[in-house]
Length: 351
Image (cartoon, rainbow, N blue to C red):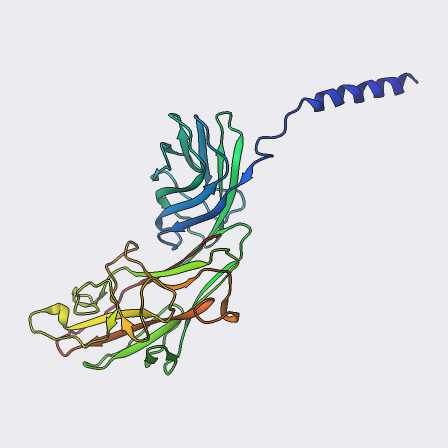
């Protein structure tokens, strides 16, 4: 009987203790909406910029903060943030740690709404794979207010962003010569990782294409863009200029042969691209072309776009998949040599 009384007393004490234990911080956190992370370079080990976009549902009070964690348990590699810099939404003060970045609001609150937070000079892990990043807002007592997650994939030549839970597959597929595309029939074979025009003859138009395939459950669809690291260049520094005749234009136009003006090297040959997708930001019609605006990730061309979830090759052309075309033509004045450059595709879904 004495043991029963002691047991009942102990249960009563525990009940009182448990009744005053507060809920863990963040147990009532709201969900961040429309979360995306767009990075400038998807290659493992590359130094990249991250642009986070998300919509908060709870105001961040004075002395509150936004925390983004890059190095999360379970990821296949570690991000290096030692040289990172960034810009916070509102009056936030940016700082870094070994595992992430923080925006602190010492001088005022941050109202709810869509926010953009940029982080530059982040060195990506050397391991390919899918990486989880967490985003949360907190009050001055370090209690979680809003929470969201994003997932990016490091794949050579491909950048992917996603909001968890998310499904995302991005593929670049090669096409054989004699493939029918919107502007005509290709006469050059491509693979997923290479376009080899081979030995080119003056005056001949060389046409090739790659097939872009995206499968995702992103509510707001996705955008695929492409950029080049340089003009097609040989070992002596000669280049095959951008279409047309090296003159940068933001408006697609009909293909024209290089004008081949002696002494004007940018007229000796040119290289252009177009998208078969009618939903992208430029109107390529059925046979209009454009040259890369410039070199590097700042100069990206949209080549595939959807505003809804897609099912890859099981979806309609122009939604889950489509072609991006490349054309090359030189004149007899184009300097001899082996020319090359690198194209990088960037796929950004928004949830």
